[in-house]
Length: 358
Image 1 (tube, rainbow, N blue to C red):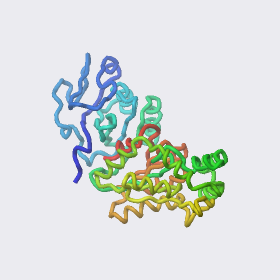
Image 2 (image 1 turned 90 degrees about the vertical axis):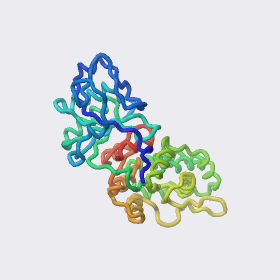
Image 3 (image 1 turned 45 degrees about the horizontal axis):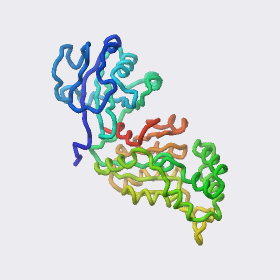
């Protein structure tokens, strides 16, 4: 069963307001976590289901029937306010009252806006939405379907620069004295300029002879990505399976698995003999293909429909994994990855992934 309290607040309304009206209002500037189901505005009146002032009724009275909603736009970010929302609506739907939902899927997140659409956006409209949102400094995601927190699901995360804020191999190389050389190769590999497996072998080879103790030094200093702990805990409460599939190393993924209680982790194992790195990887390399296979493998193992699968990552070797999931999210990602993912979160915490789930 889903814990209703964990879903957060939800308030729906139909919204059509001219820019001239918004110019005089100070309501929801910015949209803050709602303490009550009340909207207040000064000097002007908003159209909330009725042209006349009236108490707000339960959200269900405003929500369109599910079978008429074919897509949604999720708007979030520090720049979100009533006036910004009105500018966007006025530009994209000047003659239509749009069904909006204010929602806060986690207490640590700000209130976001979901626009529920009865007609899909054309490619031109999606481009216009993206450009306008960028100008207004908003995060926006257009979705035709979204996995639900009301049913079990699977989340597969990349590790380096996604679950954690660093590239482990770069930090290991710094301590081994080959930092600049390895960092340059890592950057090219993550941008898709080099074959990942070959680049990994070349980078690991530079670590030959380095003491095993440098791995512990890196692990002790690993900064988790903001929102990681809260995201994992929240999804686990909703009976989701959370895993890491990484082109990095088991030394670090195993530690994260234990710390966060993850379902599974998949990564490469560094060979260590007599307390020193040999510069080799044991077994088959976990590459882009392997990472993509993890999504289907975990879904099958736990009897979860593909429509309930999510993957998130930042590098070119994550693209097959993002495409394998029902919802693939590029997180703080390279342009090539953003262009091929179904959704992108360009800044902010990992916890914002909850904005994209129903």
